[in-house]
Length: 220
Image (cartoon, rainbow, N blue to C red; front, top):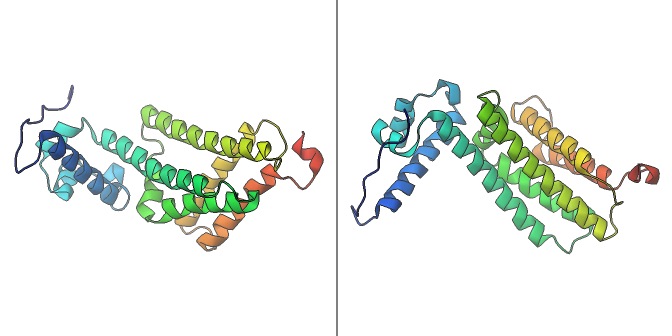
């Protein structure tokens, strides 16, 4: 299909066309979180099944999206946006805390948001993998955004004299990879630990990057 069908215009039921469109889109994304993030997963879901779960028609689906991959892309960005909002709020609230407390508060905010719904974990770490080059590009772009956020926090720690000045990009990339891998494995039941234990381990890892035990390592 070359593009979406044209959505109706004008007011109906007291709502504008834009309001109705936003509501339809939300219902499709809510249904996608249920089906893609639960059962049967993205690859097992059809347009008809998604439309039925949303309580809408397939025609209305094509008024909002071209393909199911478009829905997955939008949902993946939404889940990341929720986590980013939680992290940025924690960054603002922890601005005046010492490094250890600040890092702990920020990372707990991220983990609490991502793990608050197992379906979010599956969208972020499972369903997005291997779908298409386009989705891989989006996944890596969002991952790069998280790397930038860690680098910004490292720069803030350097400016406060809490961390050694150096290029933290490689270390931040390795840390984000560890976060993705460990949270995925924990959510899949492959890690015998509580969420608090997982978060504490990741916080220790990040603090080890910012404040290595060997002072010579900081300037390496």
